[in-house]
Image (cartoon, one colour):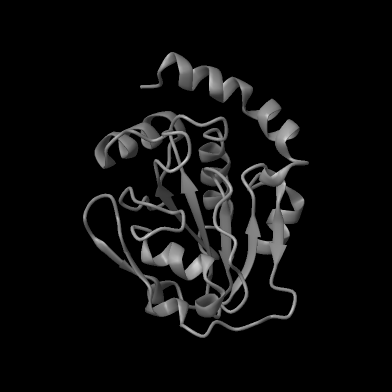
Length: 195
C-alpha cells in the first residue's frame, strides 16, 4: 500500500524528471571506445531479496540493466516504466533492481516490504536484489564496485548520482552506458541502448 507521500511523489514524478534532466541527474555516459572489462562481468554474483543467489553468467547473450532503487523517491515512478520495459524486452533484456538507502534515506523498508511495495503498486515482476549499499565505500555491493571502478569494468568510475541510476551491460558482458536518474527507461536514447 502506498503512503500519502508516495502517492504525491508518483504524481510529481513527470515534473521532477523533466526539471532535473538538465542537471547531474541527467548525466549520460557511453563506452565510446568499446573498452572491454579487465574483470569479467560474468564472474559477478548478487543475492536477491528472497535470499537466492543470482549468478550473472546466466544472462550471457542478453543485455542487462542494473538500477539502484528506492520506494520514497521522486523517481520511484520509474518502477512502472521499468516494468513496461521488462514486458517489452523481457527475452532480450534482464532488469535487476538494487534497493538502497544511500540517498536521503529514501529506502528505509526491509526486503519483504520493498518486494510487496513494488508488486502491489507497480506490478513489478523483474528480480529485486537484497537491499544494500551502491555508493563507493567499504560496504558497497560487489556488483556496484564492478560498475563504478574502471580498473574492473574497463572505463567507468561514475557512481550512482541518485536513486534510479541505470547501468547497461551488453550481450558480451561489456558495460556500455550509464544513465542518470532523470533519464526515463522509455526515453528514445535509453531504448536505443537496450534494444
